Amino acid sequence: MSKTVFVLGAGASMIENLPSQAEILKSIFKKEESDFATFNPTLLKTGERYRRARINIAEFIIRLFSNKNYFDFISDESALAEIETLPMAEKYKLLDELKKDNGFLESIYEYIAESKSHITLEDIFTILDKAIASNEHIQGYDTSKIIQLRNDFVFCIIRLFVKSSVNQSFDSQTYLNFIEKIIQKRIEAEQTGDPVSIITLNWDFIVDKYFSHVVSSNSDYEKAKLDYCVYDHNYHHFFDDSDIESIPSTILKRQGYYNVKLLKLHGAMNWLLCKNCQRLFYSQEKYIAFEEFYDTSAPECPFCTKNYSLSGDRNNTKLTSELITPTLLKNLDNVTFKNIWKNAFVELAEAEKVVFIGYSLPQADFEFRYMLKKAIRPTTNIDVVLYHNDDPNKIKDLLKDEGDISKFTANVSETRFKSFFGKDDINFFYEGIIDYVENHL
Image (cartoon, rainbow, N blue to C red; front, side):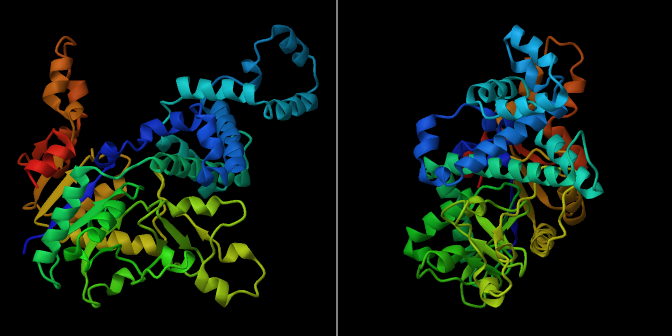
């Protein structure tokens, strides 16, 4: 039986209204609804951590990506004149006091949200990762502060997704149909079959959540399970006193289940990893990566806690989030990611058809582009599912009065796919995932 591999990019999550990469920086500094942030119990556990993180990130953005300093946000000219007369040590003390003033901080946050939201995460993380890898300081930040900044960014990104999921209903008929069709294909191929798999470059758990919902609501699918292609453990089995069984993905077939492979190349917010034993814990119900940042109750590896209980250092057994951030210096040396990427290569190499959904083949994903070039055969059928604003014909209509528009159309997604794969018989669909699942899947 022929194999189809679905590759999900950020556009595949648009119907769930998750923050896109381009919106993340603005969202971090956008003024929150105070009652929601104050009384939501999940977010409340990290309130102080979030306050400190925003202060650190804001200072970094102002220092490296603007020509301003904090004193430029003081509107009182007489106060500014007085500050100019202070010795440097006194100015630093004043800065520390200003960082405690919520009104002052909000003026800086508003400036970043309105004027600096165009800064890309690739630029931010590449700068941080380069400095860390080179053990270099940058504009007053030493290595420890750079590592802290990076952690602050990751924390704030995870928090955004947690916040967005609080009111998510996960009732999209498109995703329900998409997952159900995939499960049906897998079951029709019988227990030993392998007709379909999903590769995602997203951090969210949309596929996981919908898969869990579809399986739990239909007894015909009770033997279908997600296969992350690593030796993993169900988080709730160990941490929630739950009777949920925990069967590692690597032995699902042997246990008689219909495994559906879901390969998360950039990690996931519903994963936690033990850096000591490399065990991966997953949830299909919530973004457990956020729990790493709980001030007093961050989860610990149940295996290493037992094995190394006398070591005395809690950090040796603490579970951590593991996300591959948008950077030009991606570190894929982790054992877990090596296994996932190796399995993704095999899936693509075996595929008779590859369907890209909401993925525009960006230059920054050069490791994945390298994998695609190595794995996908010239005879493999390719579908690309994008949206109206990616349609080159619509772009041409919009720019018809601009004269030579070749410089605009040369970088549209369709051109990138055709030039990268060196073939013109790629099928492009510009009606989005809803239309594709309904009419072409």
